[in-house]
Length: 324
Ligand code: ADP
Ligand code: TRP
Image 1 (tube, rainbow, N blue to C red):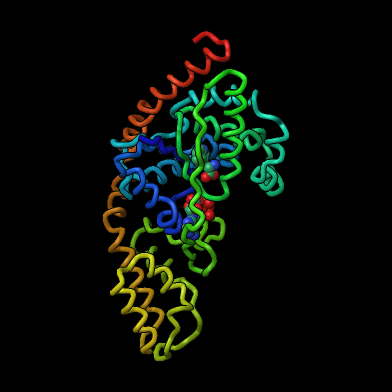
Image 2 (cartoon, helix red, strand yellow):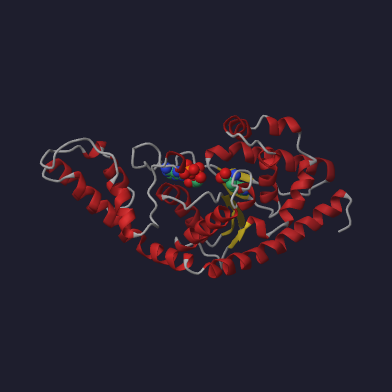
């Protein structure tokens, strides 16, 4: 059985791009009986940039509710908040002492963030070490991540190997799984959908606001009666990820026939979102109205995670020369 582990940032509610590109595939993988998934919300990492307790807390609940509402099975797998298993911070210290300073100083994401942000704190600098601790604390075999995290996984292996070569086999070396051909879901302006471009669709919004977002999708100025090109339409692109073949075929035919406005196409897209995510939307609002229910799931997950974490730490402490 492979132990698959991944962490998700808690920077706001996941959008349609995150859901189709990352979350649903991860949920599918976690449901397979040969895999055991560890999934956590990386809320300690968030403190490198978030400066509001309320924002931090709400983002964590919103993210957790989204995973649960979309069908992540927290009983079969292990689902927790990073900050609930404080063992990770102890391991981070040990790993810090095996991490060469230049490795951190030259990391792409650190260079990028330190150029952009006014507050360049030491947390940002050791971000990759905390991430390495997240992974090796749980003896993870496989870590599915986006391309932007590839270097962090290489650093994790380097740090773990350095400990192993000096102290014997202490850590499992994790393999990154990077899906090179991930689909790219366009945002309402046609660029990649992203929180940073503010062009996203939040499927968990109340109906009226969700419809408003869909209605903002950019189109050309063709009139209702004009023939339209289905191969050059953000609406059709988005629809193709959600509708079945018959529905998609019908929309394309309508484009080519004329007398079918972009407003009609947007309405069809809105309806397919409601149809496909109706249950998830309901479950998400139920959870967000009962944060204790989310806490309960996460704390149960943390208890499961802590058993593994304590076991690893005991091994590490004893290998390094500390009382265990
Ligand atoms: P954002 O760009 O909104 O900040 P993140 O970088 O936090 O999103 O991405 C979280 C996960 O969602 C990653 O695995 C990423 O590959 C996936 N993802 C984000 N945006 C899209 C998109 N437009 N299409 C497909 N997958 C996406
Ligand atoms: N740094 C990752 C990101 O930005 C999130 C993360 C934190 C993570 N710890 C992890 C991912 C451990 C995989 C494994 O997306």
